[in-house]
Length: 385
Image 1 (tube, rainbow, N blue to C red):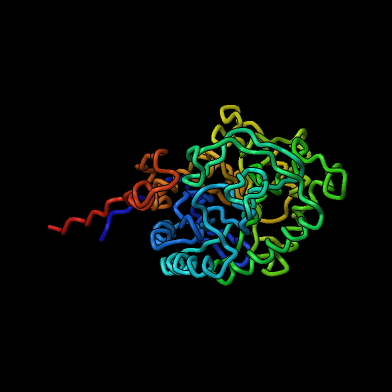
Image 2 (cartoon, rainbow, N blue to C red; image 1 turned 120 degrees about the horizontal axis):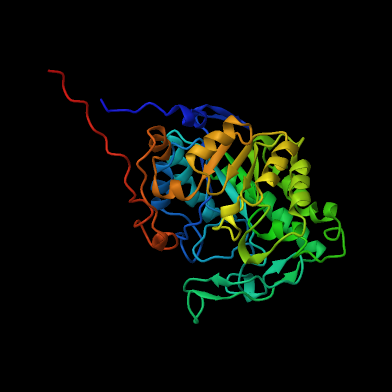
């Protein structure tokens, strides 16, 4: 028999079951997608280490997998997984099996980085692609793929043609099919963090003058098309979407996020989707987290969407419980807390203690800083006298 500590009253909302699309989550403590860059470098497959990592965290109400590219064109970081080849599908099966055997649920996050890439990842060394010609700020993490080191400056991306956009939508459809074959419970469309779909949505990047640019309606067209492509393969109640109004990779921005992102949420409403997952502005995402910049946008998006709403972004358990109690969210996605605390729901239930995460082991490497974070020590009850 083990000791257990009753959940603190103010944290109790995190432990209520919640209906998320096709299934009921036993709690509202979700695991956010976390890129860890530990996949096979040559074929972007998963390993047994990934199965252990995710199974350790199966106590989450829902796990959203690390971002997973839908095509070779969609890759932008070293050692990230794919979900578009038979070999990649087979490598994910032990991961989803391990999560299910541990009683968990897992969605695959479908990812195309767009311009936030480098020719070393692109087919035949070509330019990365985006909504328009654009060079992201900062450096690409290329690992051992470039002679100048693991990080090199981004290069200019070129604009996709309309025919190429159709191919990208086909890639989303194919990736959704592959995710189902790999045993995932559903998929999350990664339309956030300044990656490809966001590069179409954001006025600071999208300078097109065709049906995919100019007006807000046109800039949202790729988002709508990607949802249609994915839901042509999977039931809508097994599809979620992630959006980020402020911040993200490459320094992109929208001139009026308070208009663009509630409009995106409204576009997604009425489709029977599993959820909408929205990231607050944080220092980690390139915005001013101290001022809670953009929280009102999240509240407006919540009002515009008609399904379950997941909030993410430097949200403490206490704040998350308050957001749920106040109706601002139905669940909270925790990132770095889940990275360092595989048994996070149990720790929240007794108000800690929490392991500290180690940024030096976020990306690349093996089990250190990945599967070796300890769970709470189990202490047997003393025998009665």
